[in-house]
Image (cartoon, rainbow, N blue to C red; front, side):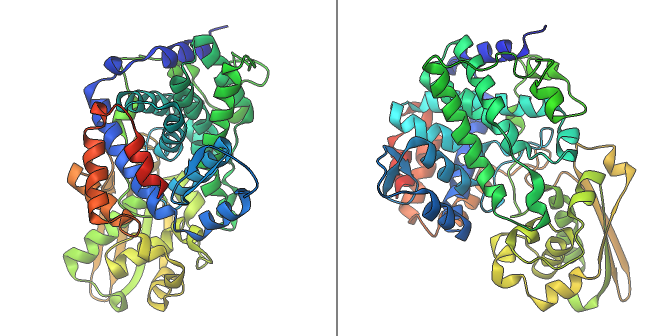
Length: 454
């Protein structure tokens, strides 16, 4: 039997800062700042407050910081909450080929545990790159399309492997211990797409759950507790055939140290599901170039790839923010009305907006083989807007924030400032940005931890 699990684990355990290419280091800094902005905005959300109220027991003692709560908790609880914060505003980083939001799992894993281990900035970047890469390779190897069609949420299912790799690297696991950690992560991972049926809060839970399970797997393996070291390839219950109808485990180890998938992360510009972003780009372009008013629009047709259209072509008005964030009709209509699709467009008070909902009722979502054939390597959509006097059409391959149309460093900083303004002063924002730009020179990540502690 090919030992994919052990080979990937040995690679994850041995990496040092000098092994990470500059391009990857640069991307990790962008992802770090972007993720912390998302967590800061997410900390204010109702679902996170509910999670904090439900999981923080004042009688428990712990040593890990819960972000923005000025309190500590057991490490697993802190990871659950901190991870969920990152995923609460649907603006976290995204890797197209794996359909994975890596930062929402890996960054809280590293910062929460790394603060307790006193890691340096170089170790932060190293463990972050390792965690990202393992998570992305796991998702690519199991077949993102088949995995999604079977109802799994890849950020949750593959996130536990990435968290185990990142935290295991901080803990100094050797190759065999790391393989055991992967085995334990794989046997405890989960995350179902059922939240699309009612817009429940479980999607936010997924990222924290993955971070928590990755930690438990790593710390258990370090203590000598074993997991299946053939967790990906085992013929009976191996992760590949258990969660996918079409997988290629060779992708776990193909061109290790030569190909770094994590250098191709995208950063969301719109606060909703990434599958809708291409259509939003189209809608905003048509709106802005033609000075269209909502009352002039008679029909809107979105054409996309089958996975996206099959899942998110809802015809009913959204009942909550999550449903709105996964609704083509609502998101595209909000973009046509406001010229933007950021956090305010998905706030509860906007969901009953009569102008947006009237236009959403005129939106039709179709799928086309032209776009389906490009997925998952490229995400593309087209939008046709029929006005009273003319019909407009445009299509986009890779929305703003996609690696083919990336956000600049300045745009990442601007996004961070926009997301964190409710928590951080201008001075604190400047400090966080400066620290992250030069994090490899820091002997300790305490300055980041202190700001996130609130």
